[in-house]
Length: 390
Ligand code: NDP
Ligand code: MG
Image (tube, rainbow, N blue to C red; front, side):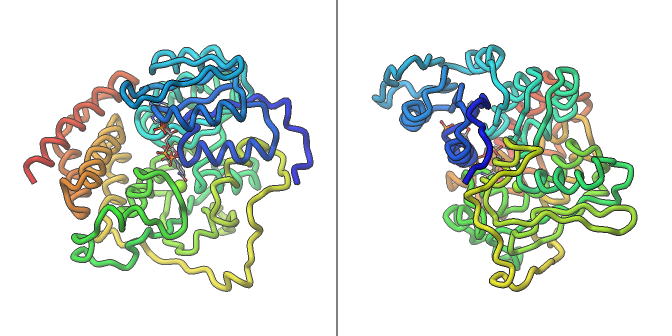
């Protein structure tokens, strides 16, 4: 099916045991690229299976579990590294063409920063690094002669729509992000009070890791994606519109000043943007199912309900406040979602925890790595305190 030779393409997958990471390896298996490095947080079993299959030069577990009885076996010539520092050092030492960054959460920041300095293609799925330190990452990429290709499906779509205009941002009127609406589309605020973790973890169209699945159900994920779009494409927050599109067939759109709208369509399958991030600017045969437009028959569009899903507004507030406010937003949401999944708070309290944390956190800091990390710990502390008081 693949009509070009990618066997010489040297690829690293950070967060290879997760939802995006495993799908990236599915695509890499099809393309026949050379995997040189894999990493995960603590899933030693799956990482060792991946090591046996792809025989990378090195692998790393950043937080190996001490007492689960599994000993990572010696496999071929693959070197095993342990710990966060070793992870960053491995990235620094990599001889690689593409780094797929699919680590989840704020803990992906150090590896994203290191990867951005290498002058290679950085295929970024991790949105937390872009939201908090996107300008620095883009600056590193520019200085080192690298290129950033978004993997998040909406931003991959916008990236592709912009190619029709040679990436000339001055001719954009707005970016239109599509949102599936999540499993609670059409719910009232009262109905959300009874949502359980199992209900929030069942996304109608996308199969993803647990954190982003809950964020999709609160629309926090779409709020994050507004900020991600602002960072990646350099537009104002007011030029990013969100439209609920239940079918997840249009992955996002760009409206130009002549009122022409360019949309990118395809089956909702993360392997499509992952594949494109590896083969850009080429397109190759793909395992992704072609669109059956007659079968789909209609595409619908709705206005998101900001009152039932207030986190969309909170995300806009964070980007307007600027500084480290987006880091505060992410950290507060991580604490709130973790408490919801543990059963400590109800679903409808997630936005309350996030909004109250934003109110209390100090945001007098310029964006720097140090300030982002101190905002993250401050927000985590404030959010956890608010949770105990609810
Ligand atoms: P998962 O929770 O499924 O996977 C996360 C991966 O990151 C796992 O391999 C995990 O290892 C690893 N990991 C976590 N922390 C660290 C760390 N400190 N160092 C190294 N590896 C680490 O998440 P997803 O794949 O769903 O999402 C990954 C990122 O991509 C997120 O930022 C998400 O927002 C974004 N994204 C995801 C999409 C999706 O469809 N899933 C779509 C668009 C964006 P372990 O298994 O050992 O815990
Ligand atoms: Mg997305």
